[in-house]
Length: 214
Image (cartoon, rainbow, N blue to C red; front, side, top):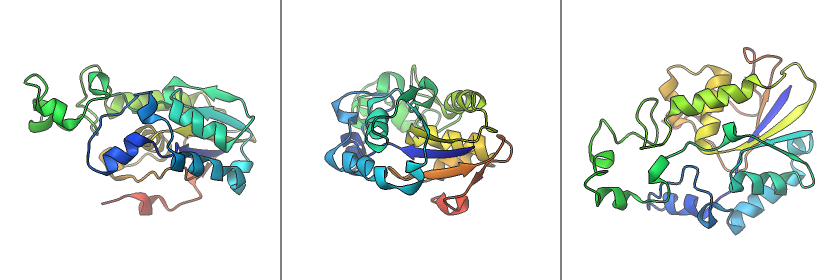
């Protein structure tokens, strides 16, 4: 099997976070997380990508930004939607900004206290009603376990930053597991993996070690 993993295109929430606003997005699914004009161009450009052309079956997160990306990259292809591929959930913090938590007596500790403030990237800590990396990794493993790696097919997986990190963790057995908090996943970049079982998967489009931002 050949697997092509693609992160969705740019969203307005991505722009805000890149500019330091710290909007907690997670599984937020509204106009703030729809593709921007640039995001749509990023996704549309994949139509002419040689490896994307090879994709015969399209798997996709159930969130709009991944669906929009998949529809632009593989127009006319049916989407096999999987909840397991959605972004890491931030529970009741989704749609809030860092300043909202700082202004809250109840939730200020999620910014100021080391026992709580790693909720965005941790295997233990999580936002109230949200997920940690253990939760996301387990559901990503469930998705991978549903695949027949011996099938002679090229599949596409359209997903999200933190979810793709967890897919990589399951595929490549990264140690220590916390290393994936430094793993760079670019918008609309095809990451190509080959193998006949979950134990022998290899990333063939990139050097995995070069993808860690230390």
